[in-house]
Length: 292
Image (cartoon, rainbow, N blue to C red; front, side, top):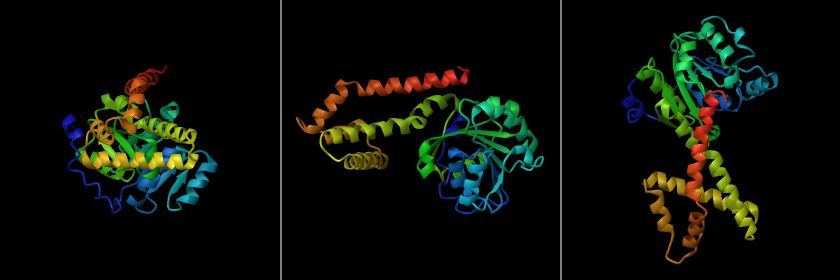
């Protein structure tokens, strides 16, 4: 698939996956927070008995079985029969990079030709494809809000992936939030914004809550005001397409309170601070990729 195709999302219908994916099976390897969030989004798309989770922790596995009685669970991949998953099936790798090597050996045994969707940070498509030469590899990077269906999911695909395969995965991921097709070479930059972004915004909310409390408001009220204002502003920017700087100017009146407040933020170097934070995240991603 070409880079131009990867950037074009206009042909994808975000509402086209209401029905189940007939005959397709999915295995989620790793039942932690991210694996469970993906399971939650995928659950309505697959036929009963066609979605499975491999989770070694018995307590966590029991929690998943209680919450999702329609799924099949395994404690270890060696409990799955050879080549159970074929070219039309999906295997989601939601495990830590440190154990990926041993997991990939099992994937070759249970689903050598499956569509493999990796959530692992720092493991490239090329590296995965070398270990899984017959598989179709798709790499995704969801952020934390996928747990409430409001996430941002970055998606990059191997050259072996067909348009149909990418579209099916992307449409399923829309159950978790928005999907952005990217070139893998841009993944560290994008992740520094969308992946790390929830931490930035959470800290802004915390700072506004504390500022309101310091000024005399109950902390819970200050937090509610900050949360609703942030969500409303984000919605407004999204719906109108307005430039953020222009919106900020529209709120300010000459000599007014907001103008004074924004002057303090500018004096303290807010823009430069965020620029440095994003650069630091990008640099650290490169270090982690190199094993530092």
